[in-house]
Image 1 (tube, rainbow over the protein chains, first blue to last red):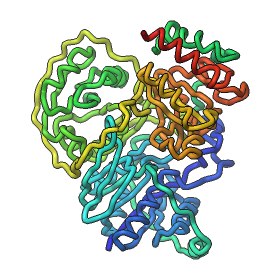
Image 2 (image 1 turned 90 degrees about the vertical axis):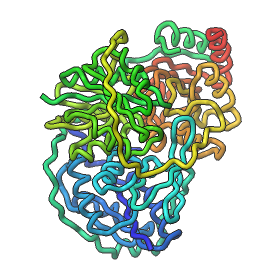
Image 3 (image 1 turned 30 degrees about the horizontal axis):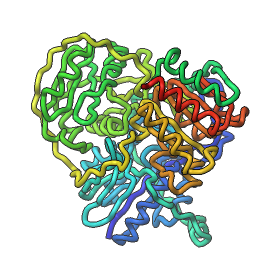
Image 4 (image 1 turned 90 degrees about the horizontal axis):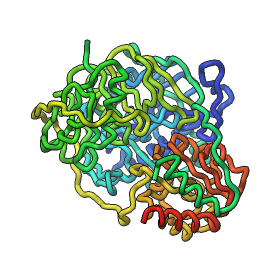
Length: 245
Length: 310
């Protein structure tokens, strides 16, 4: 029987346009969704439960608004949902510290998370949490097989590498050739009734603080051409003007 | 004053040229960095000594560095690195390592930095749809994107000291599975040519592959292409739910430029777009835009490139 944890994060819909209000992003009009890579982590956690038995707990960090991402995970099939209450923006050290404290208290065998969250794209949480727990970790997994140990495939220079990963471990998940299951009606009904276990953990002070947000620098207008014959000129310019070939 | 530390980027057992960019980034933080070269053979560090701008080089020698294991590498590097701000490359492996080392030291990590201004660091967020600037107060580990900072000039001859180190490995590589084709992966390539649904059929990607072979480029694809055609694997996907790439040259063929695709490639140094629809959003991001079908443009591109490369 395995005690399986999956970390989920609520992020702006990846198809949404991001706008600024002053020097901060304004997400008030943007729909929030589960970070896409976390869907692969949830699917992997559920496959682990099916292979080895046990229970899956989804954990997020945030204020009450983040409960929705937990309900989404519940609707897909996790057993328990936990929110670590926080309304502040935590740097990686603070975030991983509170996560490590809760994961430790749960006696877990394995933690799955997305390879990065779609908002920051950082990918720090999985390996950072593993280090704090003294666990093994593999990042950017494209395939996991379950046994006494995990067998994890991850991209490596020139191809892929298969790792033997002893438990306990943290695995961050990429898509690979995974098909994720969707919530069914029963799951959605159960999720509505499910109670979020809200936990409070002291976080250390952040040493990284957000100063401002901005739009990416605008690119100067490029050269445009009509008709395929222009490809010859563009090829020349790539060599003589851009110096990239 | 604490030092700045660069962790040399190691690719296939050698110091990668992007390490010279890391030295420049570290200098922007205020001082000449110590460069740590993780290696199994101290001779590997010779590849860093000609990069100017480092105060000294530590060849961190250990069997641990034969294969990548996050826990073992972090422990072995932590043991030899002085305290201070650590700079590594924003490659998938080094981002993983950076997070481990930061957690080991109980400090924060800032990934994908593209600008350093005193203690203010700027990184793309929302896959490049916006930028975030953070202020650092205290030591941290940061990773910087390749092809953003200028490389420190060559011609240096920095002294190398060899230090033996070790760490406990947590995982073990069982096997390497080489890619069937010898072509580069999009995550590794300096030039990428990608196809979208405008290619009409996955069979037509052969024309992209042929140009890729001429240029030594990788072949990528849009999410629409990956979702539509089973023979186009997710490993080729460039975009928000695929790979974020930062090559010198990105050629988009039959790709309209959906917001999630742009998010994965907009920071490419030069972008060429070939699309039959003059209103395709990709053209707003292209340095060179060609309004044409791929059937018209690719043969011309192929023959011109072939004669240029001959």
